[in-house]
Length: 208
Ligand code: DX5
Ligand code: ZN
Image 1: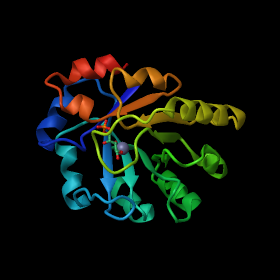
Image 2: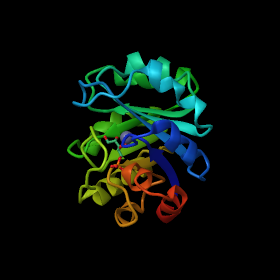
Image 3: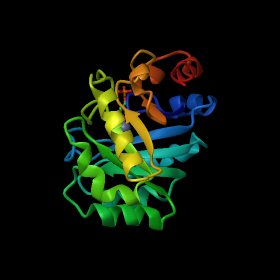
């Protein structure tokens, strides 16, 4: 199992990124919020871009924004492996996915707990990742929503049916208990479970 670490709940981002860099974590999950798609707002790109100073890990960027096309060129500049935005946005999704690929970055679509997996069908040929939200997007430290295991199985069945190679990433409320409900996924994204610990590596290892 690959692990992506979210620093959304961090009280000291530079120091936590340096500590994460000393672990075997696979990706740094960068949560971006615009105050429109979700209520909260994260720091602007001109500040966020400095994370490259503290980590050499590849980035897994999660855009919780209503206008992904505005953000894609910015985050494409960093050491980014994946850029993911939400299937619920009212924008030309195919165009945004193509834009990500134009930067030779892998493209993902995130899906909220109450959105049907069938919403993903039109975009499956363009997807490298599906980010299954196991909490409502907007903040760290929430509880894993029961029933997400079923949703992950539905996404896996869809990928098989349409012969799509995309990876499944599960995000929100992940810890060593809830991980057992995510057996059918490829990447687990965890924030507060890792960041609130004194021993990041121990928590990361417990999720693999
Ligand atoms: C929620 C974010 C998640 C969150 C994960 O809106 O997309 O990435 O930071 O944090 P935990 O693991 O604390 O739920
Ligand atoms: Zn996230």
